[in-house]
Image (tube, rainbow, N blue to C red; front, side, top):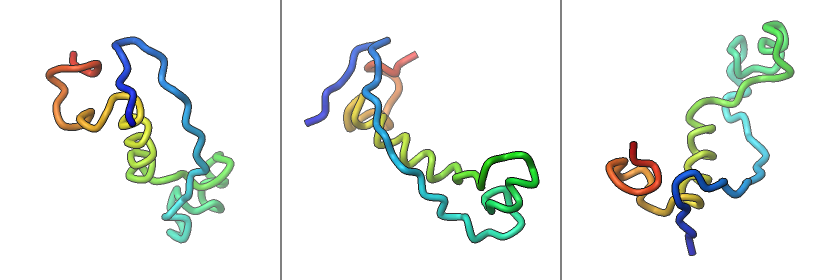
Length: 77
C-alpha cells in the first residue's frame, strides 16, 4: 500500500544499486574509461535510467497518480 505524503514531508530513502545500461557505449560519457578521462570516477548512468529510479521513489512517496497531474496534491505548484 502506498502512503501518500503531505507537502514538505520528508521522503523515505530508497537505496538502489544503479546499473549503467549504456556502459558499452565506447567513447561516450557512459563508458568508464572515457568518463575517467573527463574527471569522473566512472561512467555516468543514463538519464532515462535515473528517471526510472526516481519514478519508484515518487510513486512510493506520492502515490500512483504523481505523474498524471500536477494541478492538485502534494506536488501542485
